[in-house]
Length: 101
Image (cartoon, rainbow, N blue to C red; front, top):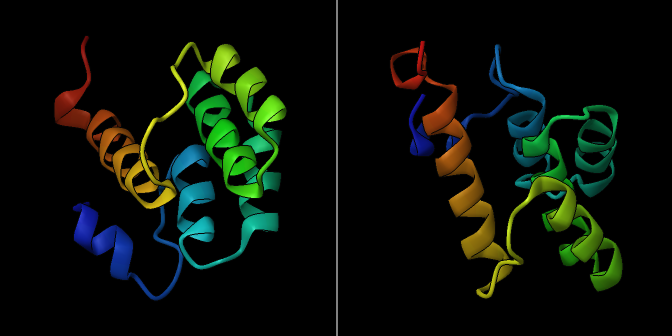
């Protein structure tokens, strides 16, 4: 799936990982669903999305905690830049042809 397909899909695309599902919902202004999905998954990628969501919420101390759990630095740019970067990174890493064996 391309970034453009992800961004413009009218319904949640099938087969998304939990972090991408969370970002898809957040991209449609459904922070609560995005947060629930990120919170229910214990992967490092979901921790990264969880950090972004708390940064968006304005809860910087909670965001710092989740960035640390994800082993990622806090994003220095805008929320939109972070969302786009997360989606692009996670789409790239979820492609079967990109995975290491």
